View 1 (spheres, rainbow, N blue to C red):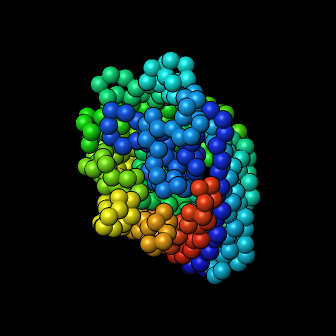
View 2 (view 1 turned 120 degrees about the vertical axis):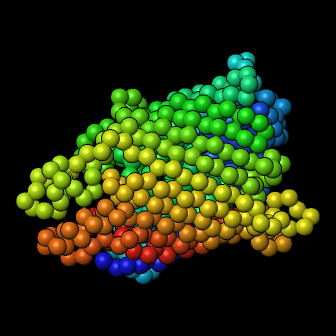
View 3 (view 1 turned 60 degrees about the vertical axis):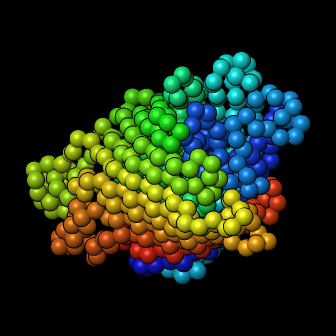
Length: 457
């Protein structure tokens, strides 16, 4: 299998809003995470579907604050927001991977966001829903064959419900949210990573590789309940519990097993998250903020050993039981840094920032046991293009020692010709050009080292 691939893309993204109230010109695919404070903001726009907690400026270069409206819609004051967004991508695999060629994929997102207090008098409450129309064929499956999907909108074509939740803000800076959403709507997010197109910058590669059906992640949300306590303007603590598998049991593509996002499963094992967040500068714009997060997740299900069978023998041994040893539960811990390095003099939202995320879990029950991503963004790289963003980043997915030992065992028993690589690494360079308030053009290049780490299939 080729050990590297080079992929180029051009993305067109356009959006529009409907009656009732003006909305950000690039609505996100899900309800967003807000900065620390007593009041929560509307969802931020971003290029990661189902990961809208990534704070990034909208296409007009500004972030709408709580209670802000614009134009005639502000006068109407209905509290109801409708939005529609289309993202279209054309990819070309130039070198390596499965095969050379081009592919097209697209995503239409519809959003309903209701301030229930403004619309109906239900104090401090909010309702949110989103749905997707996924179309085309993504480059990872059709061309490259890598693990960390090149496009964050790549998925099995379908029409899917994603978000469907109700949020209630309570006294004491506590908010409760329940319904259906993806885990990366609010957890494991990095603000600076939002501009990049590889899926790992939206939902980290480690849980995507290790959790059942890829975890609660675009395009498959799952029922959940979340509580957030804002201890101060700078500090917040979030805890959430999700249904542990977004798809019904069965063989094949889990996205087909829940084709329309309406399985609403409640009887699987649980997936719990906890995250501590510190935001020192509340006045910083979302595209140049500083954030520190420390978190963990734990899944209560059973996970198969990657090397040993129920008798303690090797899984690769044809004379063994062929049944993997089972482990109770799975987990990972992670840390995230978003840090501003430099701000252009005389501006608030132009400058350079960096980000880093590290996530690690046990080796014996996981395909991946280490994930590291990082990068640098330049907001307003040219004086005459103040709203554009340029960035370069990497995402490293480490294959666990247990999985690699299993692959070497397969070679030793004559059941495979080569062992797995130690990692799959993606390097991405991107430029997000704001053409108009409703149109974005984003050329992007990604280099994939060790596509799928040499793992067949």
